[in-house]
Image 1: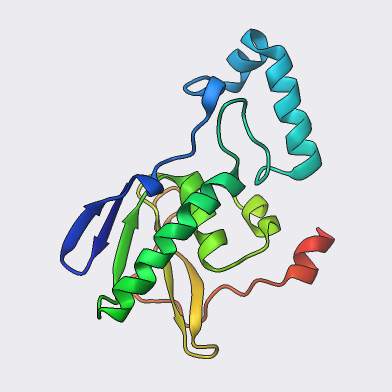
Image 2: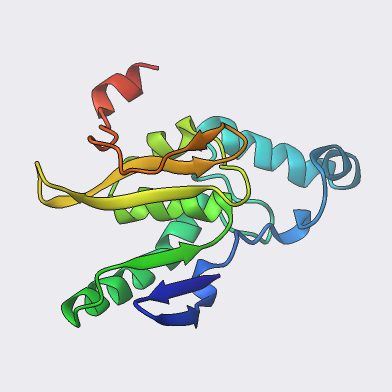
Length: 167
């Protein structure tokens, strides 16, 4: 839950992992046995609205996490105006996916299409010279997927909503 801005390191609790409420620290098998009704309701929410909108009892949905992260996005813009151009944000996989979805104003279908990255994975968001907007250059380091890039990819990841909705 840290944000590195320039040469400064900040703790920012807005970057914390998703709150799982009643299910915190439990495996799916345990939850379904101990809290069968709450688990069934959560599964129903997953089927109806997808993982991005499903909210564990007393916890947060991906949409809730993204809402929390939007105010951090404003902090990044303020820093940018002050001349701090590079930021390193360290957080958990679910939160990282919510951050990318929120920061790039992506449709939640893209959140649902990808899995959480492995621990220590690094994802690069940078300006796309073609659009002059922030874009997702993907994972430049992910030991689980054996991605070890030493140079920035030439092209960012392109998100095609029409194609994604066909899946």
